[in-house]
Amino acid sequence: MSHSDARASGPAAALVADRDPILRRRLVELIRAHDPSLQIIEAQTSRETCEVCLVHRPVLAFVGLQFEDASGPEAVARFKAQGFVVPCLILIAPQIFSRWTEISQHLDAHEFLRLPLDEAHVVGLLQAHARRRQPTRLLLVDSAPQSRTLVRRILATSGFNLAVEETESGPHALKLVRQAACDVALIDLGLRGGGGGLELACQIRDLAPGTPLVLMTGGDAATLAQASRHFGIDYVLRKPFFARDVDRVLYHVLDLRRPYLLNATTEALPVQSTSRTA
Image 1 (tube, rainbow, N blue to C red):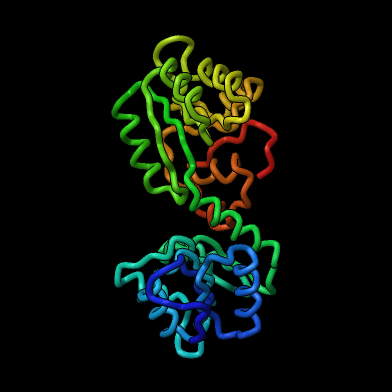
Image 2 (image 1 turned 180 degrees about the horizontal axis):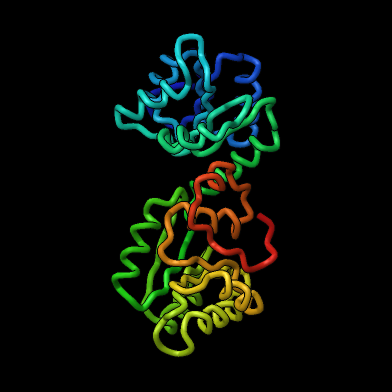
């Protein structure tokens, strides 16, 4: 095992674990070029991979599927069984089979990196990972306390670092937007008072044109998406939704490269209602 400025505590760590030294070296170069502050640690066996994760707690890990002593998934399963989950685990594979989707869910993997190495894919993953770690201010507007509580619980399991500010009224939401810009506004269509969620979204659009707007609805999301396109709505989420649906929206509105696994494991898809590229 080789270490780059390795120490038990200090800067956030990134792990590159694979039996191919050439692949490891190129991944290390790409990570270091993107974020020199990361402590980069290499491993070439399953045992080393498990040890590194338990000692250094990396925030980012590239793990190959096959080592000389055991498989990458076995290493991940071992350190996960001891209570550690890598926030951004990327499995390296020459091919992607449907069964890997199920395995990745069990391992809490973030993405597959297919070989031969696509450096643009790696850069996109690193950029998205860095953005996910940054605070993202989300304004939640919903008149129903129970609904807000449920949505907050969902947001708490998002892969993004969300700073949630909530309110039950449109006027207070506008006050919050005037006080500080938010990265995205999540608004219930059935908001009580005034013209409801759609009118509030239009008011926020006028007040802060760059704010991504997402409507929540218990009704027909597809029909609403078609109608709301003309009002500058970015996405429509149909209730009930899950953290992965919120993440899908955030990747979209923040213009980040969306992981293959997010597409593969998302069941309740939010409905795209503008011409933003995925």
